[in-house]
Length: 376
View 1: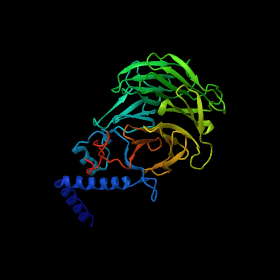
View 2 (view 1 turned 120 degrees about the horizontal axis):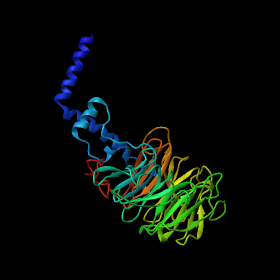
View 3 (view 1 turned 135 degrees about the horizontal axis):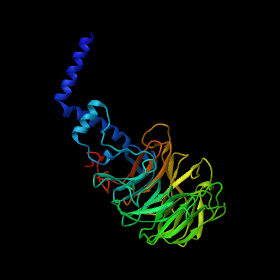
View 4 (view 1 turned 90 degrees about the vertical axis):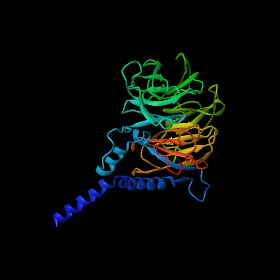
């Protein structure tokens, strides 16, 4: 009996070797079926009119760099991963510029760049020199694509061009208590840096700098619970008309300031209902001024109007690694085309959602690796 089994095994392997392309085709077909099933996830669910659809996940360099046929074949036959792949370790924040996806990886001690249109992958901040990063958290880009990184360990902001060339740095231990995030204007003239403070610190504030010289200009807020005051602020996003949105984590709200940093209003409260917050973290805005808030405890992100009226939410808390399910979400970004990028630290992945009216072939991500054949 064992002899027959061994003989049958050899025959199967021989057939696979003789028909390698067929084996790869079967594997590819299975992957396409999984992809189509994932892409059927629409938000909100019927009977409501769909606004966004799940598009893809990014976990490793091979999700944007075309994989050699030989490597794909090896994975099929051996069940191993491509040794060339570099995976996300503990992603935190994310920002996107013309199809380039920048992700801070606090364990990897670098910003990992997934250049989808260019079909390439590279790292920023892990080479020796002035630009070396110890613990990247918040990141942002200006209109020219220059990258701004909040280095929590070295307590400074480090600036690179979009290819990773070091440009300048500012800040330092005397300027920041507990650095959390960085946000820059389109022109690069102002940089907003969140100093999250702590239980024993009164420095719960947003510090504003000249984006070119690094000169400290002024601060927004102080520790407290009143209008314009913060308790463990987390992140900043800039909206239409220069509005400044600050995630006030310990007060379970988002505060809105005008372009001159004058308080306008706040929205949100502690609770379990839609529109409430449990552990709000990162924030983003789109071209229409709508506001996207990631909530780590809820395992989702909620979308609000510029004035804080709830529109919808996407995602659910899940212990299973699956599209739309999150255990420890953190970073969120919206690109020029309206695609949403959502980071989960626990599952070390980025989920991408596109507007339902947009075709998969459209926009900066439309023809990159991972798009379906139908889209190509």
